Length: 304
Image (tube, rainbow, N blue to C red; front, top):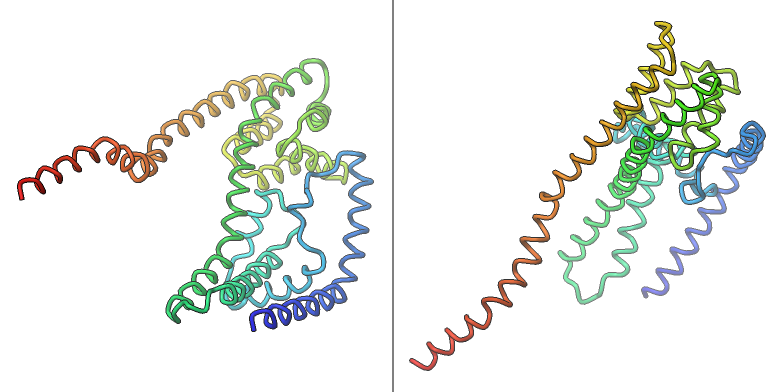
């Protein structure tokens, strides 16, 4: 019975996949053209969007339609989802498609959980497993996305002082600020280098330096990035030397990174409290007090 149900689910999934691919064929061709244009404009510096962060092209049409329906029913705010996607570096996935994938996970995960549950389980236990699977299917994609966004933003803040040092060297060597940003975009790797390359690509498309920096601050909304962009924009408006601004920013960014390290160090004892109390202390008490308890029990049994 379970084998027949699995075969039926596989056939239904294949049919849905073929229909989704047929409906999304124009979007696939358009995305392919956009990729070719982006590769030509980037001139060998592609924006980091690895294969693991790209949505499945075949299911994107179905996910977008489901997401648009879910957005109207649930009342989800697409601006918040778009901000999470940009912070995580997932630029190709739309908020409605993300909602659609969450709906698919909410439907498919309980189905697999119900099929995989042993027949000996009682009905209340099966209902509880399906309910937990529904909650995991709806919440887990967003939780993973937020976790990736937090790690990426932390990496950007951690790499900011090194980027500012590189900008100081190149600006004092005689390059302009845009040229210094281009050099930094070519030299740096990781999320910060990806954001710089995207900023340079926006400038090549005709966007001004100030607007491109503001867009970068919106994508990577961290304290360090906001401070950097605000200082550069205000310095250009007031006519202050870029080299002087960058030197002051380098000192401030290193102080900020030291404060971040101290904050993580202060959080470490609190994070260690749970495994210490519930995992380490019980085992240690068993090893230390176990023989004494056994001796006491043996003594009472002898007295009896």
